[in-house]
Length: 326
Image 1 (spheres, rainbow, N blue to C red):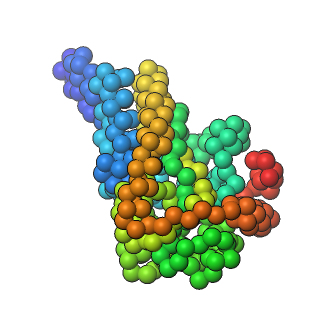
Image 2 (cartoon, helix red, strand yellow):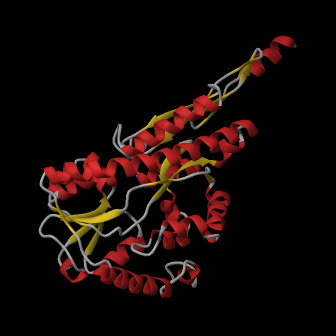
Image 3 (cartoon, rainbow, N blue to C red):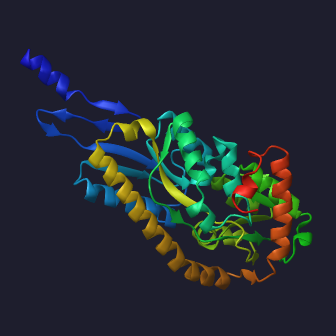
């Protein structure tokens, strides 16, 4: 009987890379996979590694987070769906990309309208998080990291006003609100996965994109671009997202350590992103990128008009623009 019990205790629980158990009184390490799409040693990778380091420290080695960078476990959508299904334990991604699960998340991805204050103080986003957790089995850990603001990058010519966007094909993520707003501004939006952007620019599939200076530098995308119009068009925050069943399988003290690690890693990332943005700008300027200052108001007005049209067409629940102050 004792032998049977010993064998039963030694059995390992495997759930999408989730490994935990006790054998002969010895607590075994929990191994978790964390995926992201950024290049190795890019700023998102540093965020992920900092989180893994903090988890190991705070759990005294009881939890080990293995980081899989550079879309090794799939593109953005595949990664999120993997966490939802349990084939991936965790990922580091913009919470706004939950729009693939709940259309109301689109309101927080609207170019030119969303600010840090709206994200930090809006109560509706808490309801959305719970909806996605309950329906799609993904939990948002505490804390967030803010990426540098997004700007417009182009090849053919520098852009100062929305009217000059005619004929410009702009790469976008697979987001209806971002596609519709940028189409409303005058461009032609083309959704392309992040890992394919460099080639799309090189081959002329698109001749522009919208992103932050640091990642354009890290991914060497500036090699295929000539101009950057400074617009602060989008504020993107990223969080550690975990399969809810994996999270529920952790003891309360480990859950606490995971959330504390996510908060500290998010703060680390926000400071890091801010500190390296200036150097990234200098480097792309040296490479030939010309930066353009412009009046943001015409862009904001057109974006708001496009967002109102989208709300009227059922892009998200009626009244959400008013909910965030518009």
